[in-house]
Amino acid sequence: MRDRRERAGTLGSRAGGDRRRRLAARHREGSEKAVERGSSAEFLIADVLDLDTLDRRFRTALDCGVFHVFDDRERPIYVASLASVLEPGGVLHLLCFSDRQPGDTGPRRVTQQELRDAFVDGWEVREIVPTTFVATLPGGGADAWRATIARLG
Image (tube, rainbow, N blue to C red; front, side, top):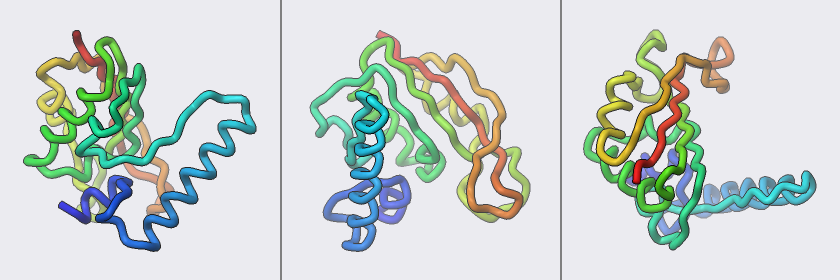
């Protein structure tokens, strides 16, 4: 599970020194750009499987390539973690690798049904549409799903 959490962008005692420094640098860079652009966006670093430690609630959450790194056992933990910080009526925007992507290299492929099954209790899957996950892969990207999921309550 450690490798999956690190690939998902977590920072903490599990992350190695080089990775911790790179994540901290990205955090600073994002925060500085937000200030330069007059944005009130906040960039936080936390364990995605334990977000309630933030002791905060948000109206919007972004998942860009996190969901697909978790196995079937970890997915409910991740969804519960999101539920702990997304306020009722809040919206999750999720981008994950799609089962439509040919081949078997790269991250685990996700079906629309897997997304619907993961976000069934206390959630409303409003939309799942095909898109491209732009990445440093041959061809410049991979087939992906872009999902809009609301927290009920």
